[in-house]
Amino acid sequence: MRPSQPSERALRISERNESGALIVAVDGEADLQSVEPLQAVLQQAADSDSPLVLDLSAVGFADSTMLNLLLRAFSEFGPRLRIAAPSPFVRRLFVLTGVDTVLPLYEGVDEALAEVS
Image (cartoon, rainbow, N blue to C red; front, side, top):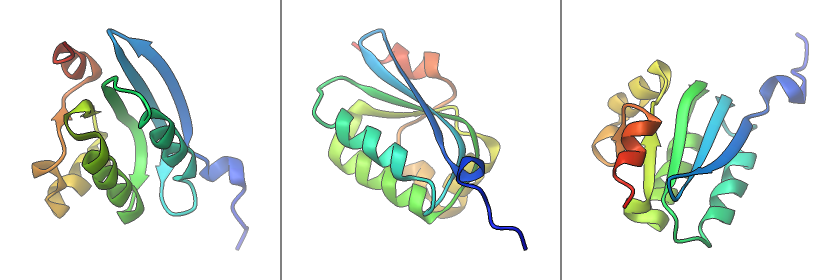
């Protein structure tokens, strides 16, 4: 069995400001081995009063580590946190675990931004 390379497992994070919100796009697999960059972005964003939109459309895999991180973020950010465009895998994970009834989910980034005052 070939060991996985860090670049194969790393989450790719991009950030931009739009309509008064920080938009964080997450791409890759979000699990115990790779979620640290997202955790760091969330910690930095906690110092701001701006809304935070997490675009999860390019997340191909997520596990309980990601769920836990998002639930903790929601606890800290409250209504400032918006989850946009969860990929089919992530949406299924949210539904199976009931997280879809807790986190503020939006069909896309535009819908999440529409509620930014």
